[in-house]
Image (cartoon, rainbow, N blue to C red; front, side, top):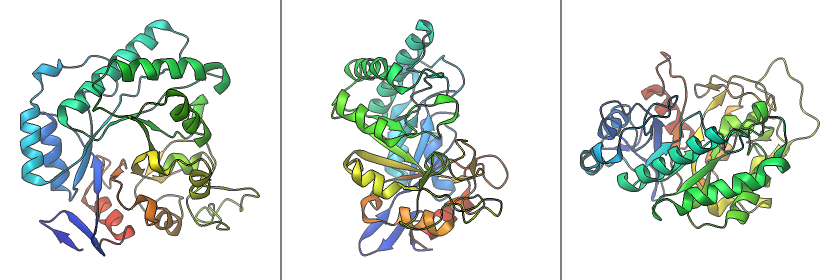
Length: 311
């Protein structure tokens, strides 16, 4: 593996790939930086607190100086923050909407304080009401969150698998949100597992995205992710990539991540997407179960490095 200092990935031609993972920030964000380096990463994704509770530690009690020191020592950067799982900006419950708004403003403050690369957000679910019924409320809330947040923080919409009415499984919804909110710090994040589940093939036009699934026949109509991102002119706003294999079939609508090379996304398709010129400068973050079930590990980092030509 072509590495510098044990964790910087040189693809050749002067291109240094950013390979990271979502790791625990228990003990402080500086510990997440150290854990990421220990498994071979040069960037990292964290939660600002538990992903399953609303309560957050006061910002002023977080040791951001220690995090900055860890970044300087290790070179692990950027630090991207993932929002918690309870958020639903499309909910009809005003209390849930308020909590969602408040915690996202907190995460934006966290991102600014840590000098991060943005907060990745699952927007929530329309709960069988449909996109058209909720899109205006989502725009209003995203705009409010951005206006209430430090200008250097970035809000990154993540594409979803589409399960249970989850928003932004259709990339056209992301394009509409970017255009309608029209904020310079509103961007997006692409997840490979979610795209596969939502019916976006990662491979070249004409490839069969179901060929890794022995129980599936080739789909009759396929949307190719690269073509759709081209058509919707989304490349300029794409900020990072979540690299995850999928346990479920193409166009299943189910969001279950698998270790790299162990799921149903054809490896050639994953490699095709991750090596196009438009993504070479973008940080890639693993959110896989890991070989021992404890989350991203050195072996998955090694597999990703091999895919992006940095081995």
